[in-house]
Length: 341
Ligand code: KG4
Ligand code: ZN
Image 1 (cartoon, rainbow, N blue to C red):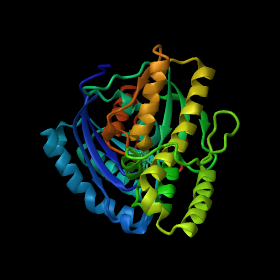
Image 2 (cartoon, helix red, strand yellow):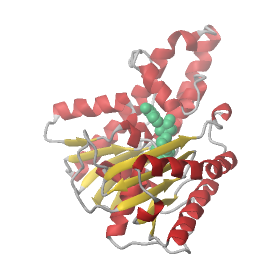
Image 3 (cartoon, protein in one colour):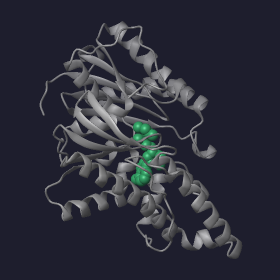
Image 4 (cartoon, rainbow, N blue to C red):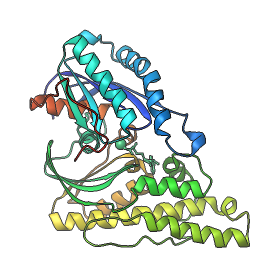
């Protein structure tokens, strides 16, 4: 889709990644992600440290993005930023920075919902990526959210199902913590699982009604399993790490794919997309490919792995859609940690 040639500056600061991107139309001309490493030692994101780190990283990240894109701030047509949902302190840094820039440069400002941006990340124009066609079904699987969404248009979206407790990424991270893996554990489990047998151990994920998900039971299932196994063999985790990772990943991905298939059946849509950090998971991608082999009428969309996890290119592209619709924010706009979908 070629909407326009507009230069949009995107700013993302909803969690622990300080990211700035510049897009021209739907093409990414710069995308810089400054991941904060201060949280690793704590096994999770420490909100106060995240906001302080955003303050330190924002200007250097912007400078790098401008250099990469070979443009100056005066050439930018509009500024898009993540208004929410996310960590309040982190969002305040990005929001204030975007508002300040818009005021100083006298440029239009666009407030983006982070979850809409994950869903619309599929419109980034890049080799190897084909944009979905509206209406499509999108499974968003991130560290904070797990949602099945009917996407009717860039701004008309309906949640068909969601997690009633932990998000899929959270399930990966909590499982990894029990295995002694660093945070975020999702990508580490993904790598280790490649060498393991997904059918070696069985972890149960309860099936719940409708198109909703529940992942909190997985923690308990893993905890009791590991307690028993390590009491018999203290080196159990080290000895079986690959198989444990593969089996945990298999349990999560099976639950995700089952619901996605049910949603596809219920809606009759043939255009399906997955987005969010967990959509980078190779096991999940393999399951999607198997589904496509069974049903070639499906049109399946995954983004480049660099656009699955938090990034500012998806904020800029979503900002461009909003810009096109004339949906601008004023200087009164405020960060909202619980921004409604
Ligand atoms: O979308 P995202 O970057 O941030 C949120 O909006 O939450 O998602 C982060 C989540 C983390 O829980 C991380 O462990 C998970 O995505 N993740 C993965 C992979 N890459 C990131 N989970 C499984 N496999 C991966 N390759
Ligand atoms: Zn995200």
